[in-house]
Each structure stands twice: as structure tokens, then as C-alpha cells.
Amino acid sequence: MEQHRERDTEAWLEELDTIASGESVPSAGDDELLQLATRLVTALAPLQEIRRAAEIHHQRLPAHLRVKYARARRRPVHHLRLAVLVATLLVVALVVGVIGAGGLEAVWGGATRAWHASTSLDQINVVSMATLARPHAGLKPLPLLPAALPSDTQGAAYGVITDQSDPNVLVTFVADYRIAGQDVLLYEQPSYGPFSSSIAKPVRIGTMEGQLFRDDAGNNALQWYQHGMVCQITSKLPVQRLLALASIFQPIKSWDLLL
Amino acid sequence: MDMKRIAISAAWSSFVRQKEWSESIAGDHYTDFDAFYRQYYPRILVFLCFLVGKPEVAEDLASLVFEKALVHLADMQAPDTAGPWLFRVARNCATDYFRRCKPIVSLEQLITEEHPQAESLEAAAIASEEQGYLLAHLEQLTERERVAIGLKFVAGLHNREIARVLQIPEGTVGSLLYRALRRLRAALDVEGGRDGAAS
Image (tube, rainbow over all chains, first blue to last red; front, side, top):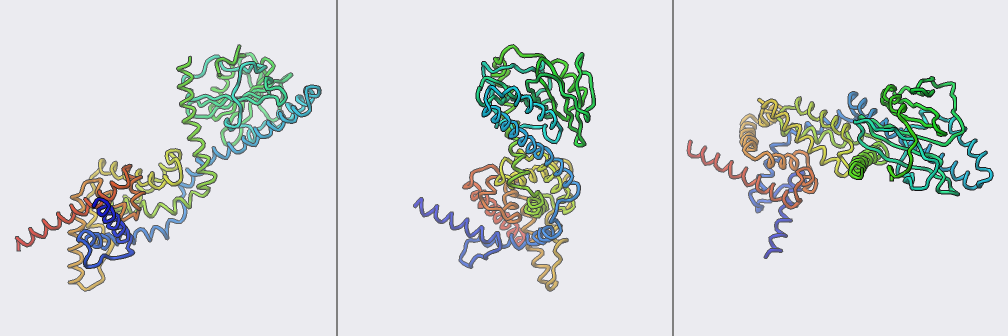
């Protein structure tokens, strides 16, 4: 009995579907609600003309939506570029691991110089954190972090690239913060000294010297050398905020805070 | 310290999900937002016409719906839920519009204006009167019933899609449509009886 009712209901709904879509009309024997549905389809038919007109005249996004769409798309493209960077860094780390500890210093120096030489906003902005390992106890050297995060920090994630032959040797430290609704990405690499770029603008970070890279999309990259690490913060945040953040960086004493 | 770490982690994981979806929208699924717009705009427009009764208002609201879609790409979660999400936003936009100003044009007037009858005057008058009755009685349905009717008969959604828009089980959509038609039938019967009594 119950099954009968279910089958009837299903059949009724299927018939309603075909009537609503204009594919069929009810027969004289069908119930009055299906007859009413047909009248409704007829009464609402003029709206379908509006729909057909819209289908012809709205083939493309209007200009104001196109501008917004372009803005919405810009960030993900960013991510792609940085995923390429991370892949490059991973390859460098792999090469270092393959060559072995003997040539590590020379290779690492070269890799670092190459990284520095290629430092530009096109290549270093965002990193896919999912591809990176989490920091672990015993990893050295220890990176630097801000003594305190701004009160409008909405998220933070940390990742590391380690030496292929020794997982306790840090090759690159990456932090991804969300501050005031903007991505703030921090990259750090051990280095024997600072790198000076001719295209960057020299800036003061407290008592330290740093350099600022900017691009047309409003990205700022602030780079400086501190405690044996080259550090770089990349964000769309105003330069003053990046300088204030960079000025309170200090070496962490252990990984406990991030584990 | 642990508490703070958990809070940051939760905020981060939500942020990462947003990023992933933004990437998928711009990457694999809707490389061309034009196609998405082309697919949904006409149906959203006509659904809004049904709800607000004024094509120019419906156009403004439909534009607003797609602006919201661009701002809240992450809320759409996946391409198969993007359509229902748009219709849900359209319904909310219509509700907001009604809150701001009650429209002075009814659906009945809109359809008469948009669809001048081409048949004989007498046939046109009868058809128009009959349709007028029907559309006028739609106003007597609950908002949810009207939305369900609009999604089914105007936007052409399947029950599964309507269920996603209204966030109810699929089986309930059938009941809702059945109940809406029955109430409409009853309202027409009452009107017919009153007319009969009057004449």
C-alpha cells in the first residue's frame, strides 16, 4: 500500500516535471492539480520570453563585473607563480642532498646567490603551504619571528624545506600570515651575508639596512639580513606596516612555539 | 598558548579552504566566468522577475547576485552547488528589496505588459482574465511556496536543485509543490464560487 503511494507520488512528480518544462500537457484523465500546473505554465510563459532575450543579449559579463572578476582572479595566478618557486627551491634542496655534505657549502652558496639574484615579485609572493613540511624539534638553524604579531592577525601557518640528506638542516623557512585581510609571506634562508640588488630601494628597518622591491600590482617585498638569515616579507600591506613588523624580528629560542 | 594555537589553526584552515576554492574557480572549473554567467544569468533574471514583478529591478538585482558571486567565490564551495547558491542569493536579494520598498507592480501587471495578446479581442480578454486570476492568487501563497513555484515553473530547476536552494530534503520539495498547487486550486475555487454567487 505504502509502495503504491510512493510509486504514485513519484509518477505524479515526474509528470509535474515534464509539464513545468513544457515537454508535455496532462491528459484529460489527469488530476486537476496537473491541469492547474499547465495553466500556470501558460500564464508564466511571457517570463520565458524575457529569459530567451537574456540568453541572446547576455553572452558576456558586463564591464563592471568583468573588472571585478579580473581582480578576483589575480590572487590565484599569484599562487601559481609561487608554487613554481617552491618547486625550484625543492629541486635546489634535492641537488644539495645528492651532491652530499662535502660540496654542500659551495652548492648552497651558489643556490643562495641564484635565489637572491632571482628575487623579484614575479617569483616570490605566495607559496603553497600544503607542499611544505611542518617544522620539527631539532631543526637548525632556528629562524627569526616577530616578537609579537599585530592584533589584526587572522591566521598563521609555518612550513620548512630541509636538506635532503639531513632532515635536521633547515634550507628555507616559510611563514604565511593573514594580517588585516592580506597575505603576509615570510621567507628566510641561512646566508653568509646580505644581498644587494640594483633594482631595489634601500630602506632602514630600525637600526638595520634593508631593501624594498615593489611591483605594479601593489606588492611590496621587504628583504634584510639578520642573525645569519636573509629574511623577506612579501605583502600588499603598506610599506610602513611591513617595516614595523620587520623591526621586531628576533631569533626564536626553540621550535616549541610553532609545533 | 595551546588555546591560541588552536584558534589560529582553525582560522587558518578556513582561510586555506577559501584559497583552494578561489584557485579552483579561477583554474579548473570556471576558467571562464563568462560561461558561468551565460549559464545562470537568464534563469536568475527571470526568477527575480517572477519574485519582484519589475524587469528593471530584476536586472539590477541579478547584477547584484553576480557581484556577490565574485566577492564570495569561496561560499559556493563547488561547481555543483554554485547554481543553488546563486538562486539562494537571488531570493535573499528579492527579500531585501521587499524590505526596502514594496513593489507597486504586480506579477499580473508585468506579464500583461510583457505579453500583449495577439488573438481575437474576446479570446484575449478571456485568456487574460483567467491568467490574471491565476497570477493574482500566487500572491496568496506563502513566500516559500512562491519561491518553489518560481524555481520550478520559471527557472526550470529540478527538485534536487530546488532542495539545495531551499536547503530542505528533496522529498519535501514535492510536498511543497503539491501543497502550493492545492492552495492555489482552493483559492481559485473560492474566487470562482464568489463570482458565481455574485452573478
